[in-house]
Image (cartoon, rainbow, N blue to C red; front, side, top):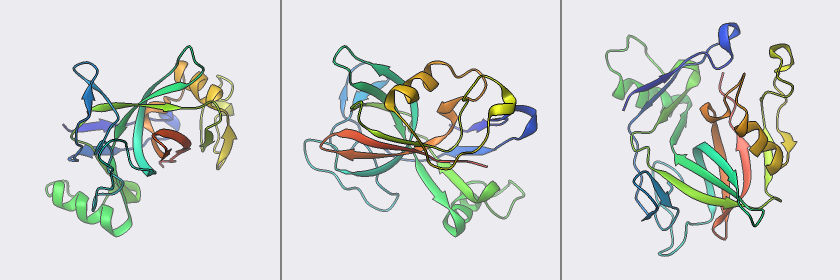
Length: 193
């Protein structure tokens, strides 16, 4: 699937991300498009898999967060789509290999994302999970949207941001999630130029 996304910040700035090939193993099916995160569900890198036979391996993974919902127990349920995130020379190599007719000699903006398998998975995150954001809609006014590197917010605030993506859609950004004992304990938004 080739997916192009432009205009993250509207007319003032634009980003271009090419989403192409990637791989992901499946877990237990919840419905036709969502799987419960189990063994071999998320790739820690494009070079190796690190999983146990029954639960997602502890580690940090790069994903898109498609949705966040809070359950009756106070836990947050994140719907994630694992991606492969490349930067620098590796991004340029993969980009040129997968887009030989693009007319470009490297990845736009120095990064490249691959994501052919858009199967999503469910992970829980406690209210105490650490969340670090780079940019989001603070007030509902364009003029107030600015980069604040590694701004600490709560899971509750992250959930609120995902429920009201009016000016700046949080689902277009990659996130680095840290899994510990089968749940997400840290979420770091990846800024994309």
